[in-house]
Image: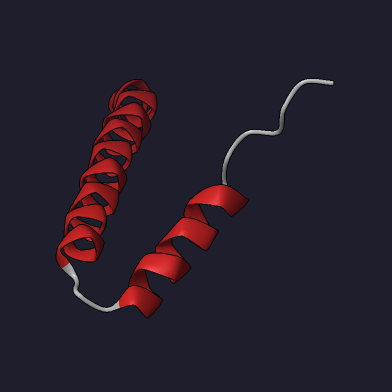
Length: 60
């Protein structure tokens, strides 16, 4: 029975990793839609700061 578990363990890890990545992307999109529809300027400013802080660095 241990060999069966060792066979499915890597597949299970890959399965969970794929689904967790999909959920994270979906969550960010929902958050983006909420921020976009929010009338408060403070929220818009905070979102822009967050987006700018996570952008990839420019090549030098």
